[in-house]
Image (cartoon, rainbow, N blue to C red; front, side, top):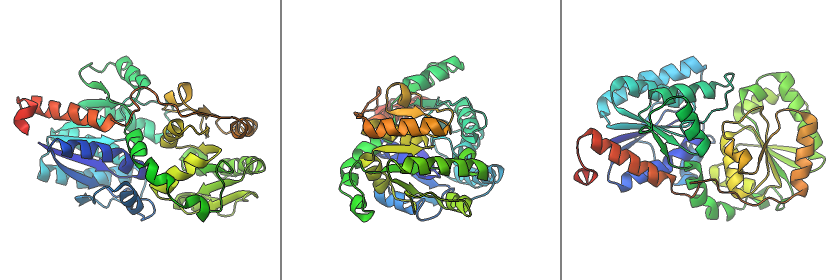
Length: 367
């Protein structure tokens, strides 16, 4: 059995590790492909080190660019690689441009395609990620859903029951396996922080950072929050560029991007997390940390209904009120169904059985 696992951006590296290792435990020959969508050492290399993820077998080096340019570069480079490797199955994760590009190539190449995190829907078509999710699901053979709402979305869209597999959340697998190491980090001392004595902020969505007026309003709101609790803002290079010339309020401390373990350690010890990241909504739910999502919608509603997440949009008064509630309140860790650290194993089992069936073999015949 031959599989190709594709990753391109920071969240992808976290999600692909449990799948890759589960396949290798089942003696599947796995090629790890890094598209190079995130290529800066702070955005890529440190994640491989923190996750103890083996180095990629193939680096496509697609770099940055518009959505069309980036997706097209992935497709051109990945098409050649698939023709050379001739895998039985290609595994894509998440909803970035690398996910879509690899999915389209695989569907036309004739290999089986598995989408990890299938069925997530924000129903906000202004988000490029929503388009990537929907199109990737449409061309996939295996729809590997992380939560009950994702399964329901896929059923409502007419997918066959044999395509849909409720497997749980691979982000949780990675989090639970790394949590002890993360808590042992010196990151609080490094930034002179006290347990539950600060808030953590992450911003990267185009709708929040690309328009100067919107970003300035958010920074003004964060300044008001920082009057209640000091804020730490790890800023990606793209966000730093957008922030130039904008006033930054007192109480907001901007630092460089952090590796995975430091990010988890800071999330776990924060009194509140304000973010527009989907993965952080999930991580804070499992960690039991209040999360305020700075968006109008979320593709992860389970973090609201069963977790610690509140979707606050960009309403200044609501953000301030919910931040105060979070700082003053107490939240406990939540574990939605199948968020138990074994999603990778379930995925490995589904794919090995599927490949064997496509070869008209029993799984044991492929050992």
